[in-house]
Amino acid sequence: GESVGLHLPTLSVQEGDNSIINCAYSNSASDYFIWYKQESGKGPQFIIDIRSNMDKRQGQRVTVLLNKTVKHLSLQIAATQPGDSAVYFCAENDDYKLSFGAGTTVTVRA
Amino acid sequence: GAGVSQSPSNKVTEKGKDVELRCDPISGHTALYWYRQSLGQGLEFLIYFQGNSAPDKSGLPSDRFSAERTGGSVSTLTIQRTQQEDSAVYLCASSKYSNQPQHFGDGTRLSIL
Image (cartoon, each protein chain N blue to C red):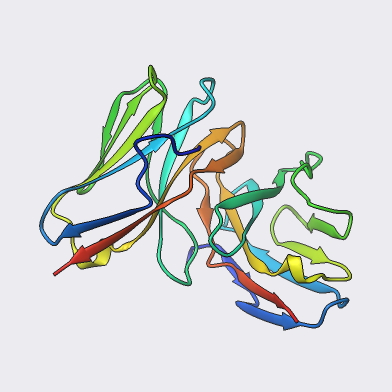
């Protein structure tokens, strides 16, 4: 995925507030999307995924929204905690190859 | 410890040397992937293995790079005659099937002097 317009490379959020991370993807034929969290020195960690037959999917404290019309994904994190500080990537699954967005660095303020 | 395991976690070597990176996927996962993450960059697909099928090597940047997967489990990525531009974090992932979430190891941080 690539970032167009709505993507912010960094996001600073107050602890306890909700976070919204945006991502635009490039391939209108993509039918599977994944959000990953990457902490310093670690590999990407799976957060949540969504397939193109859905508009919304919820997990524990996270919600992913998919707007296929404008090729846009968002990740919402409820009640952001210090442990949520990391780089967040959206990825679109092109067959089996993942194409990653540029990433958003989330910093949680105490 | 059911996650993807990669070794070594760090590797420093001189330009021109060969290096071998290892990946132990999650047990039962049929698909295995290698990606590269350069400083400040996103992840770049390198190679994909699925069962006994021929691997997709379309992402390998040069013929100095090769990979194999033995017995449908452990994989090794080999870089011959390393160059400074090969310095990056090499990440391995596995998934139960190709249309399932890919789970990553913590990578091998490769530094070429």
